[in-house]
Image (cartoon, rainbow, N blue to C red; front, side, top):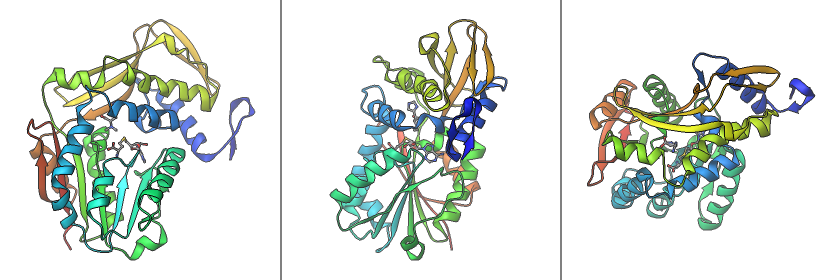
Length: 320
Ligand code: SAH
Ligand code: AVI
């Protein structure tokens, strides 16, 4: 517990949020971490994104997982624990949980604590024989696995191309960190979005219904809610474009005018057109992701794609 400006007593997570927000908004250029998109409102908005016609990654990855569920289940040892990093609504996981019936436990790990608890409750109802053991944590930092899982063989699951939201060097560091959590002999199933036509990519992040814009702007709404700031959401606009040189979609929030906003006692000045860089979503080739995984100590075992080569699911193994 700590005391912020204006004497609001807050918990450790909020203190960290405040520190990162002030550091990001006083940096040049201004930036915020995409992990802060996900409070309960942000998680619900992400679910809406996954249902958009333009947002191909979710339905494409589900197609691959459904088709390959038998192969994936065969790589899961009996009595294993499935540990999912950034589980969200666990929609993709359900197919694996239903196919790999010898799984003893499912450990969804997510930063969006309230949303995670709701999903875990639902999963326990649907899979009464499975130990559903949620962990509310930032998966980039060390966290404890639940006690029963410590003696179980572990299989990691990281779908959605959430790995693309890291800088490539951070993605390599994360793969090493996941290796330490999962242990020698582990299998890691990772969903990775692929490089493709610019129009297809840009439409996925700039949808016609404005849901992605709402998701992006929720970051400012969250700063208002949690840190008592007064961002006027009408004075910022969602921007998303594919930076082919860096092989990434960039999302920004652009200030529509010159303005000053007070955040945690700090005055933040915006020029008209100045942006806050809120997210990168890196796109890989099969080769570039394989090389990244190898460099982080994992051995690529199998890779599956859809007929359009839009998305890929990799299984990696950590040799004994
Ligand atoms: N796995 C789901 C959800 C992907 S959205 C799918 O494939 O559809 C990304 C998820 O990762 C969100 O649920 C978000 O809350 C979570 N997340 C993002 N950054 C995180 C972090 N640093 N630590 C833990 N969870 C994180
Ligand atoms: C979670 N992550 C992989 C999504 C992505 O596609 O980068 C988040 C997202 N941002 C905008 N739309 C979806």
